[in-house]
Length: 215
Image (cartoon, rainbow, N blue to C red; front, side):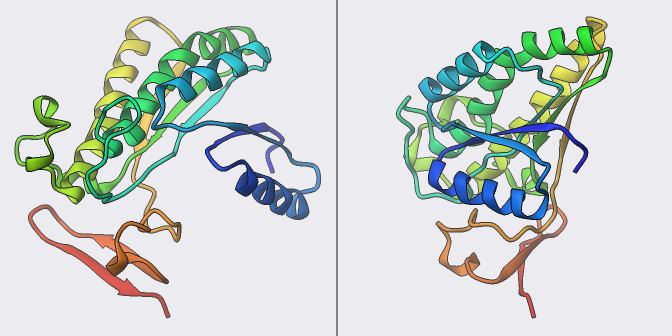
C-alpha cells in the first residue's frame, strides 16, 4: 500500500503464488515477488542471498519473520536443533549476508534502513539457564516450548547487539525485535492442543500459557 517492492522469501512457492494473487486482487498496483528460501537450511539461505544480491535490487527493510513452534526434537540438514536453526541461525546468517546491500542502499537513498526480528513474548519461557549453547542438540534435555523460547531470546539478543554495532559504526540502520501478538497462522501445527481457531496469550514469567478459543 505504501508503494514498496516486496520480496517474499518463502519455503513453499505454490503457497507464495496464491498469496501473491490474493495481494494483487486487493491491491492491483502492489509490487510483490517471491523467492525460494528455507531458513532451516544454510545452503538455501546462502543461495537466496546470492540471488538477491545478483538482482541488484535495493534493500531498505529486512523483516525476519519465519518461525516454527514447539516441534518434536529434530535436527536441520546442518545438524542444528530445528527450532534454533530456523528461528535464529537462518535469520542471523541472512541478515549478515544482506547487511552490505542494506548499507549501500541506505547510503545511496539517504533513507534509514530497518531490520526487524519478529520475536515473541515466549522468550520469557526459555530454559532457566538461558540459551543452552552447549546443549543445543542434546535430545535428553530438550523441551519443545523452552527450545522455542531460547530461539526467540536469541532473536532479541541478535537485534540488540546488531543495533549497538550499527550505531557504533555510524550506520543509519535500525535493528529492533518485537512481539507480534496473537496471530492466526499455522505455527502451532506441531501441537494439537493449540491448533484450530485459537489464540495464545502469554502471561507473566513463571505462569502458564493460556489458550482461549475465538468466538
